[in-house]
Length: 175
Image 1: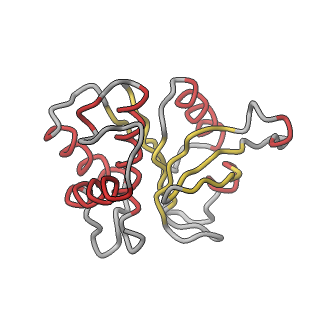
Image 2 (image 1 turned 90 degrees about the horizontal axis):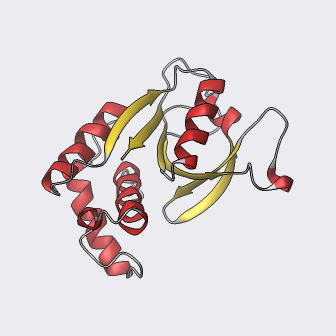
């Protein structure tokens, strides 16, 4: 999955999260509290059927929403809705969206399409550094981003300022 399955992994993380926190059990076909490697692996390959990388990967928010939307339909769930929040929004609008989503206990699949310092990749934003005094930066929001089961702290300002005209963006969930 490390060779182009990052969009599918972001969808898997979303399903497990909402099965655990919102009781939407039909999104994840196994017990969601203690997950074995084999169960996760099997689920990731199911999801890859819906979010199979194209030659350029899952390189638009719309491709992610289309593929994950098909999974949600097949799982017979219409509670989880998605909204594209493109990288053309201002940094200040992105901060507002991230804070609103985290306050509403929603993960955020984040597509970093092109960046001057990073390669294209889907990550899942799961928190902010707002409650951590030693993690605050003036005029910046630190976000906790998960990728392949590991998290790192990133500057949202640096993530949002890609240095390119063609940008990724975020998927905003609504329940």
